View 1 (spheres, rainbow, N blue to C red):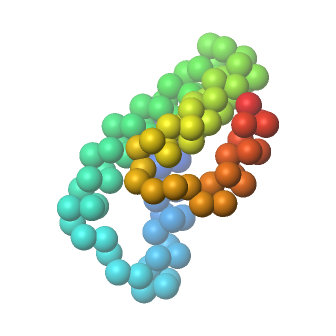
View 2: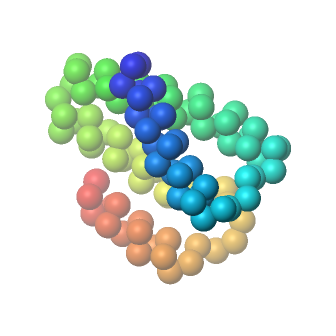
Length: 100
């Protein structure tokens, strides 16, 4: 769990710093709150489970399961997100499918 917390803090700093340097505006409070409600309980436990899986399974199996989960999300996203995916979606989805 300690590694997950450190990774989250480092990732937050690395993604926030360019926005500060660019003087980008902060998101509206409802959007910020919604992202916290979805991201914190979703990403934190997922990263902790990944670390546990690395210990209990081998790295190959763990990598296959977690990369498959990302592809599953990509496959579901057109049904959940309004609109038709653009070309960049399919360019990104193809290597993900090949990797899995």
